[in-house]
Amino acid sequence: MVTSPPQPPLPGGLPGSFAAALAAGPLVLDGGLSNQLVAAGYVLADELWSARLLMDRPQALVDAHLGYFRAGAQVAITASYQASFEGFARRGVDRAGAARLLASSVELARTAAASAGPGRRWVAASVGPYGAVLADGSEYRGRYGLSVAQLERWHRPRVEVLAAAGPDVLALETVPDVDEAEALLRVVQGLGVPVWLSFSAAGGLTRAGQPLAEAFAMAAEVPEVVAVGVNCCPPPDADLAVPLAAQVSGKPVVVYPNSGERWDAGARGWTGGATFRGDRVALWVGDGARLVGGCCRVGEREIGELARVVRGR
Image (cartoon, rainbow, N blue to C red; front, side, top):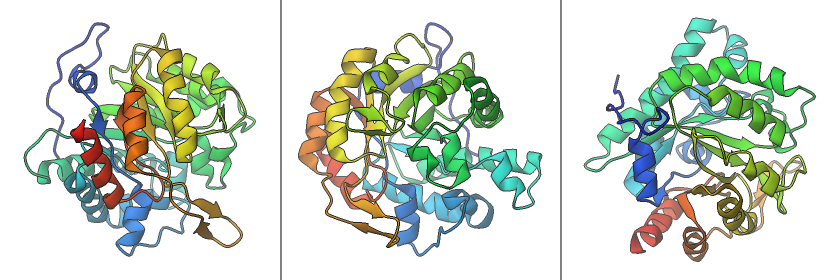
């Protein structure tokens, strides 16, 4: 097991190493984990998605993270996005075993970081939305019919396991609405681990239809939140969101959109052209982004280009 080095405390008790690096940033995130795995020949047609490989092929996850580190990423996002106690239980894994699998997502990313050669690298433990675990696309709609208190109770055990595994930061990502964001922000208070809060967005709104300004403002007074922004959205939506997040939250911005291609559910394939380009990356950094990467369909080549743009600045 590769563990995180001790981190000096910030005011309020938060570990300071990642926050200090972020202040000196920008830092380069990785790209889409699923497309990296599919390109390596793995079939992810499963309700656990990439989290299935925590059980079946953990080395595949090490290799995927390592590919992004070698392409220029400084931060790996773990394979825990779609992992849950309930999902593993449906595969016959008891609660203790599920907790070990969740924690292993952090350990595997650490192993890749240690194998990538000289340089400081970071691990972000992915905390996907409740809808991701349903595996029915509802993470892009939100409004699950659950109260904030119910969502808080559901998220808390998983988040606590991931936080105890020693990541540098928790990635509260692809959050579709403000209710789930409120629940997650309640959960992370007092854990002593920095977090970023990243919404899925469309047209200046969360996927549930709330104004992004309202969503971003939720993070302004939460000391655990070291960055706020968007992911898993088309690049043009990121263009709109980055300056708004910086203005409303007063915090560094995280942004990692999709390639710009569109998923055709009927045809079960991607359509259209990619709009993820280096000039957009420069725009985001200029508007306040300090964590910059890619999500679905953004691979090693794009992360390499992004890293060159960021370091060229």
